[in-house]
Length: 402
Image (cartoon, rainbow, N blue to C red; front, side, top):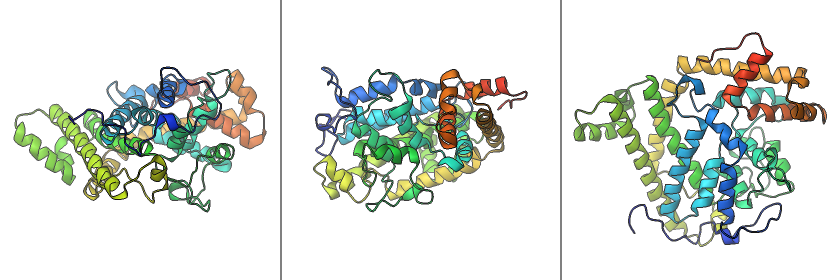
């Protein structure tokens, strides 16, 4: 098979003809598979469009060439489709999960998430993964018969479980939810539409998750270089990147800094994709799953980096943590962004009439917890730009966020 050509669908892929269906029955499409319809619905959703003005690392107005949540999402989808094609998986479901994975992110990236989590601490906190489920099952209002997008069971499962099981078979929360429990937005939903939180998700979901890691590693390096937070040679502190840079220098000894950085990012993405394909192929050969159910019943993730790549990725993340995410310039903006979110939340709690009419009516019903959650939904849906505009409308002084 030529490189880049689609492999026949593997027996352990998600077969759209065998989908568990949608919560609300709909007539099938004559021309599109259930997973293709899922993908199209995500692309046409309001929440997806808003990603273009939501922070990745740099607030949207800091420069036109930095990644936003939307451009990050598109890069994740491209990497995920490439892996799905090589592994014989359903590309439509993989793309759906890649495109939907950040729909629940609030404005200002992880800073906004920290602030909302603090504001909602007495009401279950805030988790962007749970909020993504809330967006596609409740908050999108586009169809006459139901709230949300009415995605297939496989798509909802993948959105919730792309990083692995949330509970064990006895119902105890695991992994990132061990200390504080599974968010109420998820437990409330699975009470009437079971997503089997104890099992691993499909290989398509696992591919979307690891594509997110690859995209993060590569484009945060690219954006950090563009912002001048570090230089290409500074990255030689990372063993894998030092090796890649040595090859680039030998091949192109007179390459300018900008092209060296671009070539480094390209080679890094290629290395990580190939590593995931090789390691996943090895694990699949050992496990020999013959169905999607076998993937869900397996004791661990089957889509993974090799041990060498795990170590390299950890080095990359340590470098970026210290040289980018905790850089004084970035932290100053993020502190101000967190304050914008906290200010808005407090204002809407004290004066729900300051919300838009439909939201204001909802925010005064159902008691304190329901009111706080509704305000959280409203703020989580904001773009960076709208959050700044709202803050300026409601307060005398608004941080510049630069």
